[in-house]
Structures are given as structure tokens and as C-alpha cells.
Length: 242
Image (cartoon, rainbow, N blue to C red; front, side):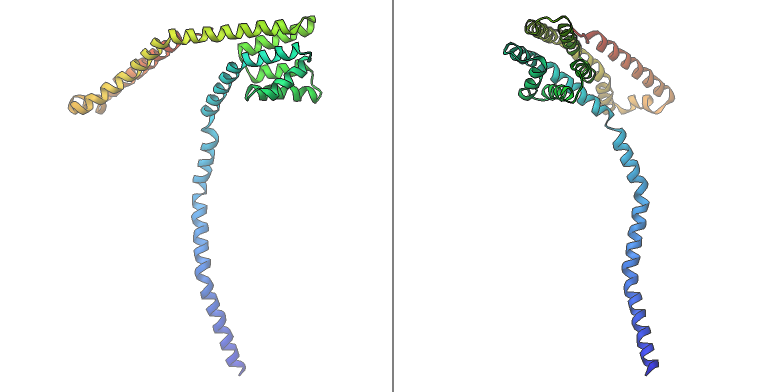
């Protein structure tokens, strides 16, 4: 009887081992597959970390343009609050609650910094560092000068508003006058590529030496360099910052 029970126990244990062998083996295989894909995952994560640099710069430039567009309205609100009897920190706090982002967020940041113990000059310097615009530098310098000399803030803010509006008007005029030059840059940049594509479709044998020989590759390299120089010069000519 003992021998029979031992045989039955051994058979049951063997069956359990074989029953578990399949899931364990498949799990190990999946783990190996995951481990084999880990370098690719790490490479993809590194690519995600390094790729958005140009995107961050683009978003920062767009944010600065929105701040520039909101400045006249923000300065008008500051002047109105100062005429109503508010101090400059109170006017900035009120403008932060009334203005839309991103300029409203900047005003709220200045108010929060002064509430936490920073001086208004320090908060304005931080605002200028975060928003490197000529209009913001002019605003910060004017506010500091007014606080130092004790002059009236409302007329100063009115003059700053008029100055910013004139700069925006001049910027629009410059954009209209340089539109033809920018269009010329796009045409000059795209024409060689378009002509090469059309010639490849119309007469492939004529274009083949340019793409299949060392002399052709050298000519293409020289053409790309000259094309880049031309686009750079056109961009430098039509890019005017009023």
C-alpha cells in the first residue's frame, strides 16, 4: 500500500511539473523577447528626449509672439488700474487675473514672487529674463525708472502703450513689404528640386549621370551649398526687426 501511494504521489508530481512547464516556458520566452527589445526601447526614449529641442524652440517663439501681441492690452489695463488708485503691484495682480495667458500668467508670476518676499525689481528682472522681447525690456526699464524717480505711472504706461502699438504697426508694414522677398526665397529654393523631379520623369537617361557618377554627386553637393547660401542671403535681406 505504501508503495502504491508513493507511485501515485510521484505521478501526480510529475503531471504537475509538466502542466506548469508550458506556462513557465512561454513566460520565460516573453521575458526574453522583452529583454531583447529593451535596447530599442531605451533608444526610442533617448530619441524622444533629444528630438523635441526644435519643437521647444518653436513653441517658445510662438509664446513670445503671443506675449508681444498682448502687451498693448496689458499696458492699458495697468494704466487703468493705476488711475483707479491701485499701486503697481496691485495693478499687476489685477491684470494677471483679467488677462489671458501667456501674459496673464506672467503677471500672476510677478505678483506671486512679490507676495513671497521678492522685491518688485527682482520680479521684473525675472520677467525680462523669461521674456526676452525689446518691448518687455522697455517696459521693465520704464517701470524701474518711474519707481526710482517717483514719477507718475499712468502717463508712462500710456506712452509705453503708444510705443508698443507703433512698433506692431511698423512690424506689419515690414511684413507686407518683405512678402515678395520671402516668396522669392521659396521659389528659388523649390525650383531646382522641382526641375530635377520633372527631368527624372521626362528623360531619366539624361538625369542618370547626375545621380550615378562621382562627378554628378559633386555637382549636386556644390548646388546644394550654393542653394543654401542663396536662401540664407535672401532670409538675411528680408528679415527686418523694427
